[in-house]
Length: 329
Image (cartoon, rainbow, N blue to C red; front, side, top):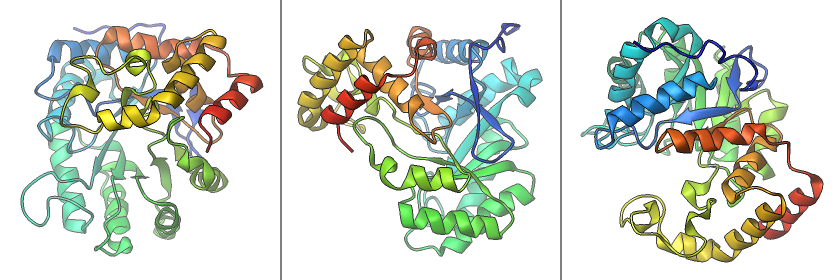
């Protein structure tokens, strides 16, 4: 039986209001993109969720296709929620998404009403939940009318299967259209989830200022750029690392292209008295408009190391200017 730390709300985790909503999210949220699939150690997965909750991380983020195999992260997190967190459901924000390929046939991906609402029903079964707190459209569909996809999100709320809705990976122009469309349907967009890090600053140009001006929260994923913004790759690609695999999102060519920038950022981190990954995560947390940063964790020690960033003061102006020089927008 899991008995969480009774001091978990003692201030160790700051909570930030999400846009203009009444919902607060932890400054750091736990993403289950990796390390929760059937191929992963389920004892470690349980330990990560327990430790996160003990440290005030009340938001667990998923998607229908997380694994591998697709769907297995929801199955495993759902089992752990039922076994360890059932009596703490009202303390948790659970999110999921639809949009990427999940099952065979013409309805297994993208953004039709059929796809999105079927996907949500499947996710709820895997998660063993009656509702999720946030339901996202994971990516825009170039062929389905935007109104159809947004009406599916609105229906999810109207049916009581989601409390809030969000968008992810939408380009600026389409994001604005979608947010306004949802407002017109009486279901405001709570939050937007972009890829964002020191190495990928595109949201700063237009998206983050627009979100902040329109009362929408932002929860960046990959704040460490899939592990590039760690000391791991400063001297090459270690055997067994994510970039050493032929499959996956992080490839050797990306490391090679960014190596000079990574080494410059590492020098800045040393001057600031912290490791590179702490500098990168603290930088994201300090950016205007960011509600929460989504992190992954391979084990409890890695989770604790990331959460230690919350003990750091915001980066000073000299450090911020040095980062701008090394990795400009």
